[in-house]
Image 1 (cartoon, rainbow, N blue to C red):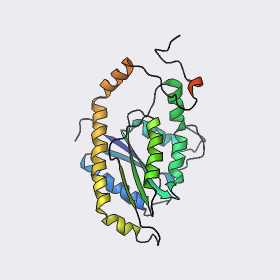
Image 2: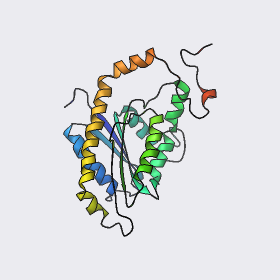
Image 3: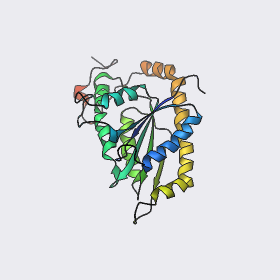
Image 4: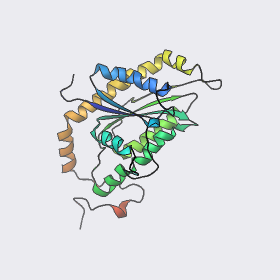
Amino acid sequence: MFEQKIKTVVLLGTLKTGDESSNTDELVDELLNHFAEYGVDVEKFRLANMNIPVGLGEKMSDDDEWPQIADALRKADIVIFATPIWWGGQSSLIQRVMERMTHFDESYIMTGQSDLYHKIAGIVITGHEDGVQHVVGNLYNFLQWLGFVIPPESVAYWVGEVGGGMNEDAEKRRKNQATKAMLDVMARNLINYAMLAKAHKGEITDFEEKHIARVGTRGGTESILKEMPGDEK
């Protein structure tokens, strides 16, 4: 549909392994059904089925599968972070992703060049009770420092009622019209901003090169910054 193919990477943080049914995975697939209408390429990583060791580097062991994900992130136009809520926060797998993305941040601080700048971010969340706003705030705070673009209404979620069991959650989620509307708007906005970023990539780069600004200056990192063009001698 588009002159340039939009590439999307989904980082699925369900704790369920194999092909076991997951509320978060189902909600992601509903979003991807909208993406299919736009002819978007999608690559989905089910993190629970991958070996992603603890660490801050890009490759922590010979069988570390994080480099495969990191390479996909570099090529992506849109990145979806999909997580269930566990005790008020994102899943441990999405937290692991945040930790492993540290090498992108360190490279940005040291070189002034980010592999992730201007990529479009979206979030999908499911849970049994509340916690959505906390997770959104936590993830988007993290992602904006890495240079991601956060479009309006770029989150879709569903959470169940307080108390009771979770065995009816999936059926209730599938019927929820507000969640369905979120998915529709989210897909449109993510793809719209991804198209705009690709169409105007040259203009964005030219503007940034003409208006050099120091990057990565948050939280005491100034002492290790590489000298940037335009710094006074």
